[in-house]
Image (cartoon, rainbow, N blue to C red; front, side, top):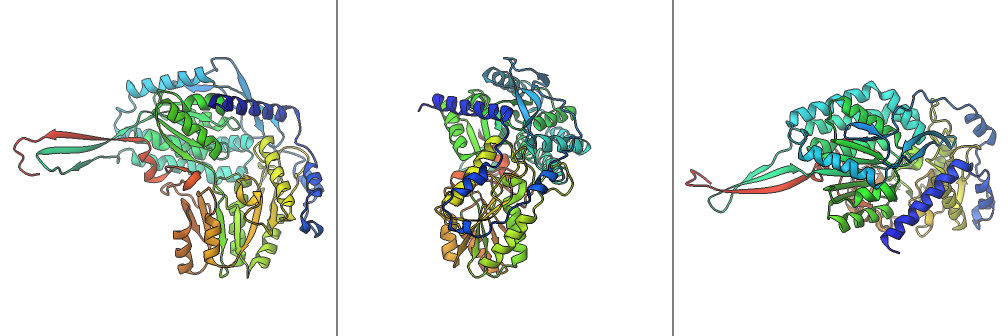
Length: 552
């Protein structure tokens, strides 16, 4: 299949998925039918089920989101504008599968307009010529505006994404502001070097902005990834064309409007809403884009890398998929480890690229850990993400909902033991019960593939050499977790695990200064911290003769 044919096929599939979300409710009871056909010998034992009545009650009266949708057009050259084609596409509420708003649908002409604005702003505009201190001040003003509008941003994020409002308001919005303050601090601290030469020469190493940066962000953490990409690009003096995820276009537009309110010049940041195979592909292959940063699946990352190579060999940063091991050693505090492993997997509805989705537990504590992990999953509060105390909202859309249920069926058919969950939660929207499998083997699909949902797979191991070998036997290498009281055990594992981040006795601890990225097929390059700046800077050597120098 040619690249063009592949892009067309993906686009057709996306259209079908969109039509399904508009016209069909997610199937009720389908997972029960599928599970009943499984060959799992453990299905004869009692499976912990969630109360149907409790699920109905939890979703009976949904909260009306306390925010209005104000921005649905593209932001190009400082102005909100319609798509060149006039097309729009729907943004959905995953609680109900109902349309929130119709958003401008970007295509090739819209990307061309946005890139032209960004190119002009870089080549002729004030941003790269502005003093780094003034760029710093604009980014700091934006962070202040984020805090001022935190409730609106959090409400939009929850409404369009389904994540708990408390998570968005108290964790992700503060992180958005913190990340921009971090990069604001870097704006006037990016400097070059002067190096000695073997002769009468003055040699400078300059770090220059790379130019126009194309950025494609995913739907699971729209605002956090907005900060990870836009923050370092702007701090280094670049201009940006950002394509938001088609599932979650609303908050990127709101945040971009606040950046302009903070004083960002027109054309420096342009935001296009649209589908990956059209707008995303146009951005990845654009000849006037100097740098590309993409976060998403490994499969799509390969396409993005190929498009970048086939066009102008633009520099590419990729943050891709993962199947991260979480290793519970025999000396671990079991109650603490259960809670940490639960958080590592179920956080954000399991829709996290670094989710601890392979829980390896030492055989001596396996049975106790399993019972407590199952009990914790049964206590997880699923419901309307706008309600206080809710831990888990809906999955993002019907496509992801069906994918997760399909993997649950595969887990049962592979002879893993379904301990709890495994079905739809409620009768509307895209809610799935927290699900736990035991007796999982490494060759099962649920242990190999990125499910991206609330499905915990618990595996058993005997010793460190074995678990290191098994944990590394994957094409991914994004993250890993270790739970132990022994510093020697921790040191052995952290150095042996081939992953970009290893958390010890914790998980999902993110800081603006910690670099994030993966080994192997989990990506190329790093986001956050000082390492993220390297992707948005060119290195130039300048050599000048010295006449009669006093010293060398």
